[in-house]
Image (cartoon, rainbow, N blue to C red; front, side, top):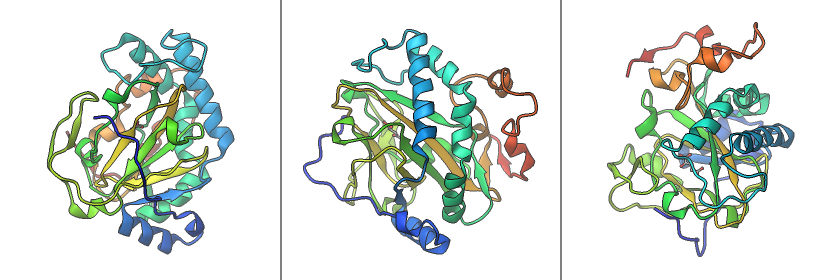
Length: 284
Ligand SMILES: O=C(O)CCC(=O)C(=O)O
């Protein structure tokens, strides 16, 4: 479902000023189901990963060296997308991002305890002219399982002005719980069935800004109407003492961990880091 340009939009609930006040940040996140944290992630780290993602896309021949590639999108059936994603999932820098101190600090405040950082990270590269494949209004809980108390951090890897689209979210929609869904055309996956209540929030984001939302918060992609690629990441977090579904501990889409780790330093603390935590793992 293509996201229409929004004639007017509400700002995201902004938790930036509450970064050092964990109870207040958590209260805002719990009430709104989404918080924007401006400047949370060091821009240099994001740019480094964006450059690696772009270089991998060029290397596998998925996109040309220029930055504009109409029609490029996530497509599990496309061998070039698969080749790109396999390279991306092997990048240590991509797997290191979710563990940055500023992110961990925010997530500890929001989840309210010891954090489990899901190792299943998602990278996206969305080209211009892909509107039919924009993700429809949905809840991540349909895909994550385990506890509903999982929070997704979505961040663009470049500035994300209006023409690049980004993510729109319905604040407070998590309070309706898990909603009925139906198969979505275009992007695949599932979309909310029935009427949505609540107003969409959207704002231009800058490099370093992060949107953090609850697994039952309704959100959707926004069309990339620019001439550029939109690179972004989805990272997931929950409290370590809540159940986690086993596939959240597997790589996204591709590979085994051993394949991903093959060229990493031998005694790398990032390898299998979640095995140091006492987890209640729900089998799929
Ligand atoms: O980045 C996008 O285009 C969509 C992301 C999305 O739908 C999600 O994070 O669930």
